Image (tube, rainbow, N blue to C red; front, side, top):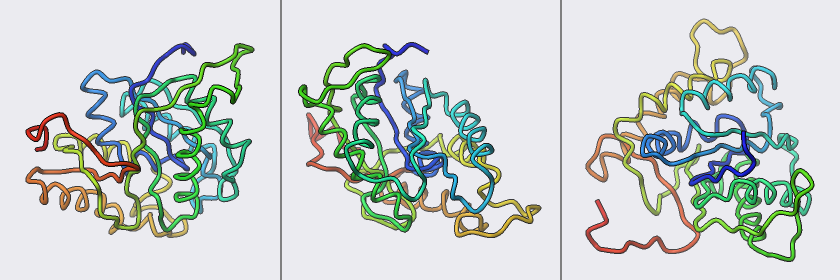
Length: 242
């Protein structure tokens, strides 16, 4: 895959499956709209109770194929122990400058899992720093040009957070659920004898759909996904709001 590929959207998650659980309806919809979308996982989810890093690697590939994204990469940060420091910021900056996304979607600003809020701030900081020309990075021996995404949006995860805006994903819940269930070691399986976790319950699997349905209900559509913003959302016309 060409290093010169430019993305419209880069969806970033601390763990493989964060993107699928939280914003894959949006991803699938924009892919159908002809946008180039990529996924970046910060860790391999190696501390997960169920499955292995190797099974997660394959599941992430399967989910990416289901969603039709243009690229998926994994930075291999330490699950649970990565930090918001210069080394980790630079690794993300290299990816941002490589793919030059207009929009970045990233983890919830606060959540049950410590990696989510930590990953949220790390990505947000890297997006700002990536626009500074005096921070030098290179890829394949070639100096990269500065690039700052125009917008950074934070999806909502385990903890219920009031969204600043929502995206109508009606017609895409089927694909969203298919991408989530590609992680067959992680989520509800009545036949599995693996240890139970908060996300492996039947209730959690069902919550993915009913939470999207509730956001959809509020805006008068079937399903929606919510986001928080770092600055005021803006529209060109009052009629842009649905």
